[in-house]
Length: 465
Image (tube, rainbow, N blue to C red):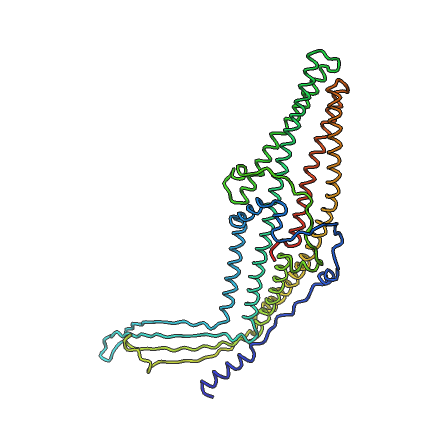
């Protein structure tokens, strides 16, 4: 058989066997099959007009929040790190793809040698060579193709992980903004409380000075004590608010103090509806972190195929063309040297290392299959938890509003009676404390409800689709 026929034969074998694949077929975890049978969520609260996931933060913070999110996506150092990880994953996939293609190179060589001649002297000679060579791994058992697919799946998983991190960073920004609103309102409430106790103290002190029978020295001291207690909370709330502004500065990579200077007085959204809810199994497509978990599992299956391929022989084809002469100017295509070669290599004894690697890859695939099932299950639990929280906090908010209205009416009535010389100072102070406590609870309740709504948006996958 001529060299040309041998080469054609080897290429035919390579083409005929290049369809081999040792990668196991993916299996759907039983837990995900169970989730797929669920018709709907169990904790759906009554809603009016469902809101869309697209730009969900606008429903909470409006246009100002949209501007903050745009700044976050551009400036976040956390997201920049994850973007670079995506770039690395894509380049690793490109490298894996390049391994399947023929490798072509060149070599230029000059050799100067010294050898004895017939007269007993030594003479020098030069030899120049230049050539092109190529190597091609036929990938009979699909090792390179499996490695390429694993790398591509890994790159896709990295991109989905970026989207998941993006949603988490957006939700963290919105939470920080909501916390700033809550602290600002609590600070306003503390200042309002201090003003109320100041008025009560001034009224009590004035009555005592004019000798009113309804005011005593102990009443003045009690009123003064309540005023001082109210003033204690203000510096701490100012510190917490300043710290919260710095948290936002850090997340947006701003200079310290930027958020404090730009902060606009805002309130919590009222009557926010929940997004449109589909079947729990739809989270496989809606959640980027779940999609990433599935892709990592599939990539691990490809790694099994690549590890299995190492157990079998590998066929490599090589070709080279070389020109040689005493001088570079003497090169001629009429004198080229051509070579064709093939190499069949395979393991004989590796001490169990190769089969152990297959078992390792199988165990990793099983681990990632479990992680895929756990991510899906956690996603469903996240949605259910957010729905339960929204339903409970909504009812609690209505009761908090009613409690504030009642406490305000009671405070107005008791204060009016006290101004008329009726009632005691203790009843006034108790009514004021009750009003302030219910107002504080209302702020905390509103913040918790908004955070639960943020949880629901994020648990449904955000707007990455």
